Amino acid sequence: MTLSRRHVLAGGIAAGATTIAISPASAAPLLTAAGPVRTSPFALGVASGDPTPTGVVLWTRLAVDPLAPDGKGGMPSRDITVQWEVADNDRIHRPVARGAARARTADAHSVHVEVEGLRSGREYWYRFRVDGHLSPVGRTRTAPRRDEMPATLAMSAASCANWEAGFFTAYRYLADDEPDLVLHLGDYQYEGKGTTNPAAPRVHAGSETVTLEGYRLRHAQYKTDPDLQTAHAIAPWLVVWDDHEVDNNWAAGVPQDAKAPEWNDTPERFLARRANAFRAYYENMPLRRSSIPRGSDMQIYRRLGWGRLASFHMLDTRQYRDDQVCEDGWDTNCEAALDPSRTITGAAQEQWLREGFSRSGARWDFLGQQVFFTQRDGKVEQDLLHTSNDAWDGYVGSRDRVTRAWMDAGVRNPVVLTGDVHKHWAADVKTDYADPDSPVVGTELVASSITSGGNGNAAWSDPIMQWNPHLRFSGDLRGYLRTTVTPAGLRADFRSVDRVTTRGGAVATQASFEVADGQRGLQPVG
Image (tube, rainbow, N blue to C red; front, side, top):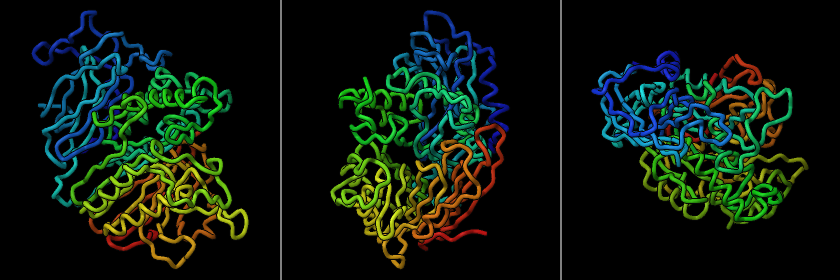
């Protein structure tokens, strides 16, 4: 049985608002001395992530008042035992795994259960229970066996969901597709204070996120969105951050605005802010213990396999990068960007990626990462290179080394998956963008934003494509990327929503491309 969005809403999220009686034979009582939780604590939904052939991470965070200003979700200052169940059916009949986890007040009552002992390549359903309250039911799946070649993988990618820019309609349509796996490529939430614009569709709660309480509150507000909850409940997610989870355009220990009072004006204060952001991010994402932050450091880059079909190299292009040059943004002939010693990944992550390419036997190797990889020359003046220094264009040496690494390793089908730029893009990766006849050595697919940028323009196409022939498509509507991966090829559908500033937007496929196994270069469909 496949769990559709209708099943999730009818049997899952709706269940979060109901209670049932629990007999002593079916569940142990909570180990608390102050009495039971009287109101359903599952207002933030459920999620799963980082699947392996034998297990998956299950997540929830207890909250009865998600917008409580102290970031504690209205929960009491005591630990609470949360029971969990996993079954091979959406009614959770005869669970195949069950247990209990402690939701600690020190962790904002978040729960990360690393379930093991499951069968590979299978769908499962799960839920949590506290004092007679049932959580929504979530659908997840394990990865195939490492030696197995799956017939297909349905994988979707999303990025850039700004609460104030619109409604998360695209998440709902992503869930309707019932993917096997979802990649979130950064900017899951935005750090700015609530807008005073009366025309804004929605308003952030609280001030700019700086403190741990502020980041917790912001994550909780986003998690109250029903479309986001539905997308989390439909499939396991692989998540990485970009900048807005901490501070716009941050780079390692450097904030965007070092003059900001009380939080960015000294390195120590910014690192304290970064530590708060990382801790709240972990608390609110379905991540493994290996990603538990250690102060202002957090291991987010990691690798997951999908049998012999796909390998996902999930990158961190923020925590270890050199500071941006030429004032962060677009600049003309920024010579510093060409410095071969500059890095966007850091040396250790780059070596990890190189080793991963060398060991990969996957049919498809995906780089799940944050910022535009291929060159985009804005060419505001003839014969002058005009590029964005926050993207890989500001780290040309890094891009050259990573591209060369997958070529030297003989990676069969390299595909870069990207977020950040609030538009759909499709591009051919080359080793020499100045030579239109240079060979294509890979593919980049850029998912538009969920809401950032507002409604957009369906008729828009970026004029820079005229002098960037390796850029094959651009689209200025909000949406997500849907892919179907098989041993024979990859199909990418750029799914776009006609509006986000009001509810009820319609979705359509704006463009589709295919990449054949072993054949470099995007081919348009239709």
